Length: 335
Image (tube, rainbow, N blue to C red):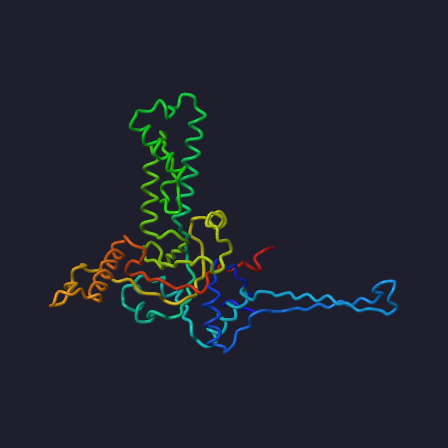
């Protein structure tokens, strides 16, 4: 039975569990890992096999019920890590903005350290942005279609009509390589604030450029500061639902309190010029040095991350390789 800090029963609602990583670490800590729980049931019936055979017969039906222990594996691991003092709870420390910039965050939690953090976090997925914007544009064009005075594609100016036809052809011939913004049909909406299809396409481009399409969870532990902890949740590792639209319908886009347990991936650098110490890709004989090229490209990616233009944490933030993400189910608060 798991207990929280107040000694109450702790029931977790899991958003994510990396079962393979949990099993691996638990095996190292405990020496073994239970795989399944099996229950066997046998029934025996007595009677005559047929009218021609005088002897009784016995038959048995045996069923085996294999119950997955995935939901119990992580609580077992978390209790073991707590008992062996192998995981640090940094919830209170990261609420202090000075802790982020004083150097303590990095020195106390080097890459690979196992940490637990409970803080406000919000889901983000560029695919959900695209699906929501596509739904919005479909609704707008639908309402416009009900209005007899709304210009139809045949009455639009030639340049606009060509753009409409182009996007219609895109939607008919979309492939797996189509960009997310291709889902937005052509429209213009005039109201309190004018917006059109190009506005939505631009926002989708920003979303998928800054955040690789997939489910992200961004934590913001410090009130009124942009310091963040970034977590990428790997698909196929036990979501409650793999469909991002269902996840957002259930949990929303606003921040709510989540608990994250995982290892520090890396701390973001403050950023410097991409040309500092870049050197040349080639040696004295003119041969390309693969290591130099890799260092320069990685330095450029780091520069992009520090500038906010790649899917990397920004200073003084850090990334976490998640073992599990869950929220606590309130107990004993009902009258």
